[in-house]
Image (cartoon, rainbow, N blue to C red):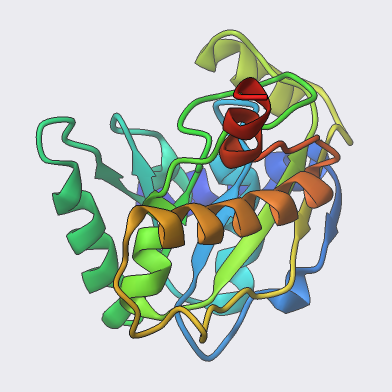
Length: 216
């Protein structure tokens, strides 16, 4: 008997028990690849998103991460970030999208349990503009653990803790064909982060607004 179906079944049961609500799943497109962009509060955020999203879209989702993760447990795969060649990650992600597979990225760049979102990194915007695939903003609410093992304990022992909300697809037709410069990337990134903030119940202050205030 193969191990993967058993692990997939057990993980699926645990995720379903640990998830209080999944809203907006109908926003996940069935007929095209997309870029999932979510806030990041816990080691297992990806798994809570991945199971319902793959069940609906029936396509592989690649997670962009600084290290190999455990998303293989539920059929996902990691695109590892090479800090010395970050542009390669964008190229790989765009290639996956054009092949009909989806990509997930956490624009904050690390786990953040505060009530405010961190300024978004521009990777999601770069991928969306180059691929012209829609961005699905995702809000994640729930407990956060200091270690991966603590997250696993929460997953299997606690019930009804996590709330996932998928937002409306975002596309940027006015930006397609324009030169992808810093100003455009920041505009698109801030738009994505505002949506994530609304879905996750977190405050978002754009980096451009912060810089402007600091100069007053």
